[in-house]
Length: 166
Image 1 (tube, rainbow, N blue to C red):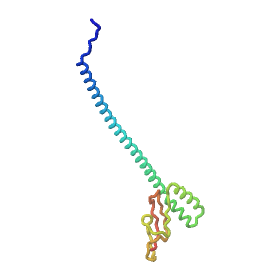
Image 2 (image 1 turned 30 degrees about the vertical axis):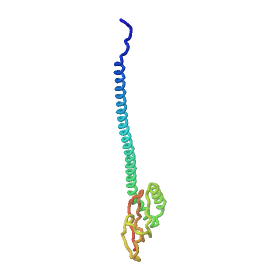
Image 3 (image 1 turned 45 degrees about the horizontal axis):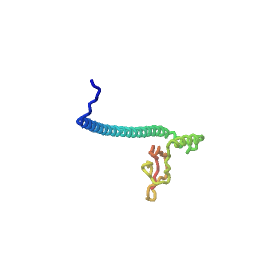
Image 4 (image 1 turned 90 degrees about the horizontal axis):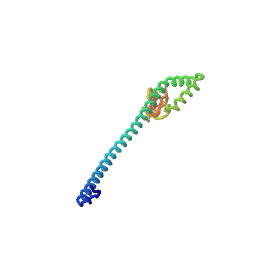
């Protein structure tokens, strides 16, 4: 046995070179495929992230709307108490004004607004005309507020009952 190595033949160099070229092409192809797959997965992840962010925003807005509706129902349930306080105050009952002021003040901080309609043009969105008196024939104007109307966070909670002149 001899330890001599046989010199490589030119045929072996060409075959080795071709094998290297084929391996490089395969690696480049695999890299392109992997980059394409990575980009597809990245797009999917970005879409999912955007969908989740939109879901969170919708859920937060829906929850806020539900809270507003629930508190609006509570405020609406308290309107008869406000009416009673207002009527008692108008008839000169003693001790009602501080309670009425505190109640209306607390509800106003949460979003309740009483309509100020006296001597203003009649608006059927905010008032219900239950009485009518003759006027100069012009635009109808609220001449008397019979029951105060309220809005809750920009939405009419209860229309006012008014007497209209016009």
